[in-house]
Structure formats: structure tokens, C-alpha cells
Length: 86
Image 1 (cartoon, rainbow, N blue to C red):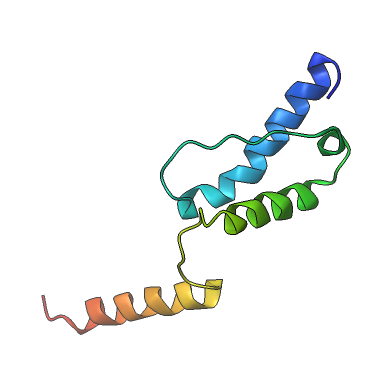
Image 2 (tube, helix red, strand yellow):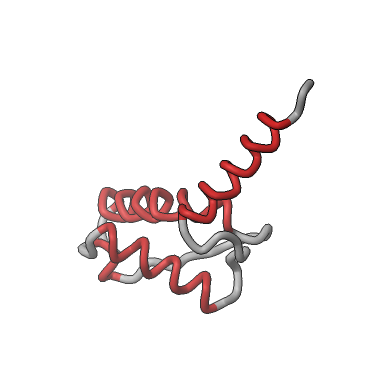
């Protein structure tokens, strides 16, 4: 990819792109190989590419499809707690 500064920058960006996906990733070891274009790609493209690759390999746990489903689950849990007399 280039000199050590560029390699380390790409490594930090890949780690940051992976962060939000970690809770949805299946347990295991993952190896991402950065190509030359990763050094100049915008961060959003790195995130989308990583998510695409994980989906393609079926390495993401399926869950709520959007934040609205998560919010609905939280509301149901809160309503259940509020309904308990204890």
C-alpha cells in the first residue's frame, strides 16, 4: 500500500469501519486484505464494502433490519416493566 504511515492509516480506518459491525458479526477470525485503493477511498465506501463482503460470506447475524425495529422492542420491554406491580 505504501510507506508505514499509509499502511497504519488504512489499518486504523479499517478497524473503525469494522467497529459498528462487530455486534452483528458471527464469532470467528476475520482477515481483511487492503488493496491500494483503500488508501484513497472515502470512509463511507470502506464501510459499505466491508458490510457487503461480510454479507456475501454470510458472516453477519440477522437481526432487526432497521433502528425502528430495535426501538419497538425497547418500547415493548419498557411497557412490560411498567405493567408489573412489583
